[in-house]
Image 1: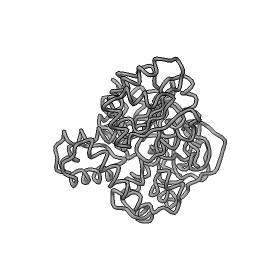
Image 2: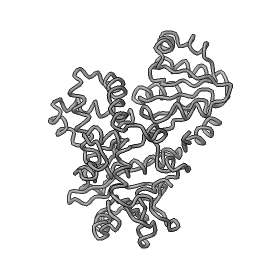
Image 3: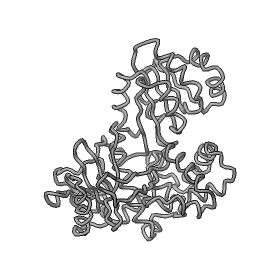
Length: 403
């Protein structure tokens, strides 16, 4: 059993909130996590069962009379009519932790939650395994601080390529002999085709799969919806709709640019990242770690991996991650800007053991000239030894994020 860092957050939130909602993509371990924490009083039902789904939608009152709190309801997005009745059920008692919910399609969920369960629900986000969980330790939110010197866990491109290629779905760690390509093919054919295509009402499967492939090839890059629409052969509006669903379903992450009144020369274009690098490489037709290492996409996949590890280190600690990026019209770019309280940390991601510090300083200086006050910066790279570079920057090994 792989222990998830969110376990203690779930138990803590259940002592305060009447309802707990755990969201995230399919197959990242939401149900497994909650079932490991269930006591003998709490029953578990899944709305993947068509009969239970029918009952929850057609007669929500009878459903909750049949399955009263405390209850775990899996894949609750399939019964949007249930939410008002959940409110009625939990308001009959002040007992916290009455109802646990999971949902892999927050796009549908959030409307019901905001309208019916405001003030009653704790919402947590679970993604695939992060670095700490794969190492059997508890996840810590990544902060570029001057930690004690320690060795890096990933110091070569080959090691990193293997980690990126395998991705973060729990099954691929729990069952290491699983064929990665077969798993990703099955995931694409079932969950992406069934859940996402039905959600966006795609009429032509070929166009949607072309869209996924083209989007995967753009992971870690600026998101140009117009160019994407041209490549796929659909309208700009269709691309926007599909992107919104993928983002809301946790398949991709859209990172917004950092902008203030003083950063008028900064880009307004967001960047897109696939939440799982193994899925992204599969969609791009990459079938071995060696092919990935030699691919022109390696740098973008590596950035995707690092950004997602940073985000997961916060989410899996039960915290929101306030992350943006900076890019101006002169080409200066900072991969991540992490806001932590009053601190704004610039974070650069480099695929070498000794990054070019002149380039990094130039990018940070460009942003500082807008009047933005920056705190200690982080350099995520292949360093063999994590340590402060100087008073302004700290080296972090790409395999140690969240440890």
